Image (cartoon, rainbow, N blue to C red; front, side, top):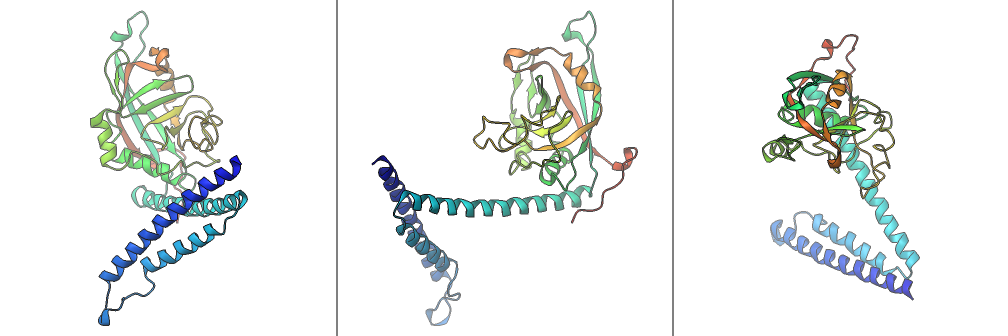
Length: 319
């Protein structure tokens, strides 16, 4: 039957894979033994890594031969998937712990604030947009607590600290978001997307991408929050112009392979909201998804002390 043929093919593929792993394990074991021999030509560490790997592979190979039906195979695959998810959960926990520790060591326990200074063409009545004067304004962003979003917060603070955003541009002004990235503005909406000199700075600093799609339900994509775009997230970030908690939260990005994931949300604008209205006056190309037809450049980004924000108290250090 078709079901039996499917089972036979899956069984054959897994058997072939495990056979290759067993040969690899044997090669590693032989290499290990040849490099670690003591007196009397004996192995220094009996039961070392190569031997242990071989034991595990042999056990797995035996378990595979005990599979006699599609149900057995599904149970076997399910157990392997559970084991892999357990390892992923441990890795995520470790990455979050290290991200939190690094952020505290570099920038203190928080709260953390970032100022993003932009230069843009200011609307002037009865004049052509090309002749609008270029002015500057500042967004002030309060970052999410390290207890909720340690990895995303640390990544953005590091990007700001290393001045990676300076010279980048906001390029998309859609109905729901305003998005920035390492892009260079030309003229009339002509951008050099991921412009090599800008993009290279993020890549060389190893600060271009999130290691995973970090998200916390206590810091959703409400209006004026910031999120990382893409899979994996970064370096592009966006400002939520409306409440995007649903379509940017878990399960909201159905076009991605892992649609149950969410965009990392890591900060919220607390000052300079009026700049969004100013930018909304700049013409856009709706046929290209809201590409801005005027340059909105990030001229500077900087971390500012909590003491400079009225009524803000320092958080206790996160262990």
